[in-house]
Image 1 (spheres, helix red, strand yellow):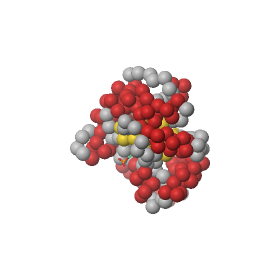
Image 2: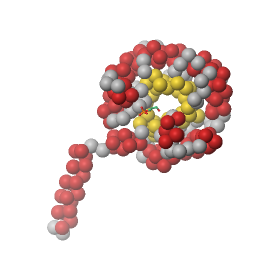
Image 3: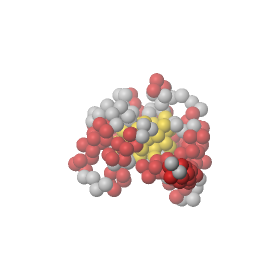
Image 4: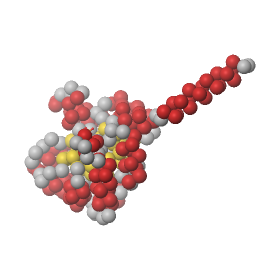
Length: 227
Ligand code: G3P
């Protein structure tokens, strides 16, 4: 499974990339809003992210509400950098927009996916990536991982024609909150997990690793003291 980072923070992107594990970046309007970012700077910021991880897919989301506006946004965003992926929420307006953009070779990441029918429609319309959410199901007392498993199984039963040459559509496990989400997404064969930096750091650690590090350091200190 590939790791994407779910952030608009350039330092986090650079640090994750320095680990040698990064295969892409996803962003969303809420993440950008939280930084206090201005509307006028949004596209420049997306370009900075694209440059920080050249060659890796960077999802930039459109908040347009009509098919026409989504297509216009998609074309404009796609022109910002060769590694831009246009993120659109699944809805009646976005399916024709996805289809039109896919026919022009523009990659779409279909987001806010919460069911297998939504994911199958996204794939048929030509989405390059499909983003089922996990954590938000958990937030409402449902089991996000069970829902993810249904989406992965349903989508992987078929091929779709648009992005076969590059292995698409790929499923991006989104709304990832914990290392357990990451483990289970990988066991189900999800292609990608997009993980916030804090959760990515949690994936590096394990209490037994931390305890082991302490005991190795303490024992080595005894060896050094005995010299
Ligand atoms: O970018 C979509 C997604 O990863 C959102 O996560 O934590 O806001 O549910 P979250």
